[in-house]
Length: 254
Image (cartoon, rainbow, N blue to C red):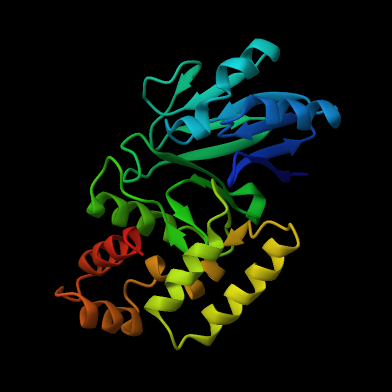
């Protein structure tokens, strides 16, 4: 039985705690104290850490957690201290009875990876800062084309995949989605529902890829209404990469 719980950190980070009857993993522990407080209060046995990319708000707790617990740390090829097992796209990480497929998703950072498990027909995805509910990550180190291809790669996973992102950005992302598609009632209703959740202290995550394809403009790069919205605003063709790039640049300044 797989259980996944959020541990909140900083202003909007989620550290995900994955638990089976063989133990627990934490994903992107930027803050060791938040993890220690949570697992100690619930007597949780953490066995390892999954890291998606090198940004400090996702890696800052690794060293302190390893001082306190005996952990295996899986992450990408970078200069972050404390990663024991460096993995690339196509590799498999096996821990606490789960096999995770590693997927290369450069764009936000060049080292960014995601962890996907088929989980016996109930698939889960830990995508860090590549894909968010209603949006996608900023392009810091890679190219817009790399980010487009990474988002596209994730969009091709099974539609029932539950998506666990690194931040609670859904409200701001859906504000932008409403700007891209102002007449889309589904997005408008999604915004209102998420607003209620956040106001009640309930995370908007996880989401599913199926749902995201209805609300996330960055997954609708082939949608006629999105294409019309972007080409009317910017001097670009209807090529999906150009649509995505123009939209991401628009979001950067939104």
